[in-house]
Image (cartoon, rainbow, N blue to C red; front, side):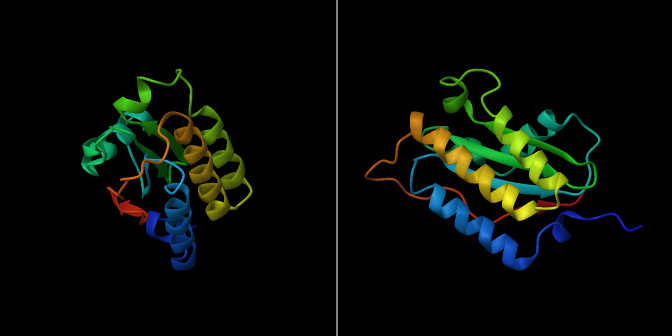
Length: 149
């Protein structure tokens, strides 16, 4: 049995669909959303997602309102983490329902559906605390990113 890799987790069409979902979502909020896929990790998923968050430069947004949806493919681990600006405004466990939706979709083999729904859920939550500003600009790439470890 071959292990699924991060690059094989989504087809090219599905990656484009996720990038479009991010673009749509970011038209509702000044927040920034990224989706990152990785093959395998040894660390705690939240700790590693925080490392990836920094590695992707997500801590450099003007309002510190970036959100990372992180998926470790081989280990079947997911995390959703927000930057300092978000974490100062929301209760602990704010992203728990997003993680639950991801896990449900992934278990049913609906990877792209799960990621697209998660992106829209994140935008809905961000909109409450970070509404779209008139001078908003896209600060981070909407493309799905990958790393192999």
